[in-house]
Image (cartoon, rainbow, N blue to C red; front, side, top):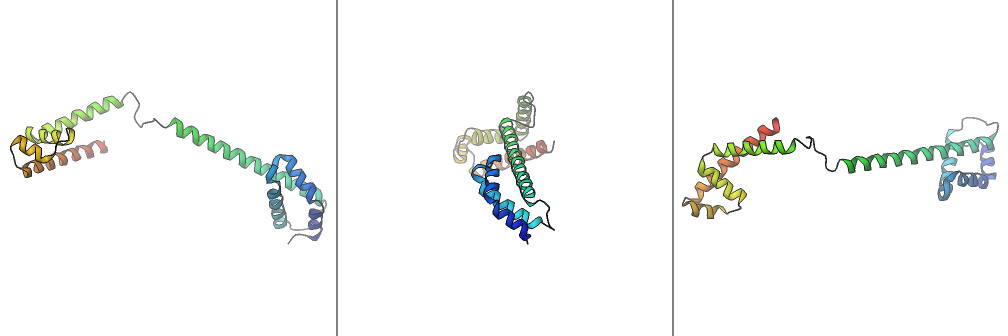
Length: 170
């Protein structure tokens, strides 16, 4: 509990402390800061204070310094976050010059994988996945059963997934 002498000094000088906080830049938050000052002072007192008014002004000044530092730190954090968020918008893990080369290499590997499946399976995969042709129509075009188209697509999907896993592991 707050020493009765410090409590009396605080209450007697409440308006002066409030003006002091406002003059230090607290503005509309001066009342809130004065309340925080009261809480901080009442919790931290362990014995009598020789100059209670000076003690209260010093505590109010320290409170303003803490508020200033917190505001400055929050502003810096927001600024840093904005800089990272805007500068990283188009960033990639790969250097910009290597991306087209890597994409061409991956395309070459995908074409080789499809070629390894046979001409019919590669054709069915391209017609369905790239051209967007329904499986039933592909079956009619090639004069094969729908189940053969489905089987070739499963084989092609499996091969492409295996390629994807190998690329992801590399």
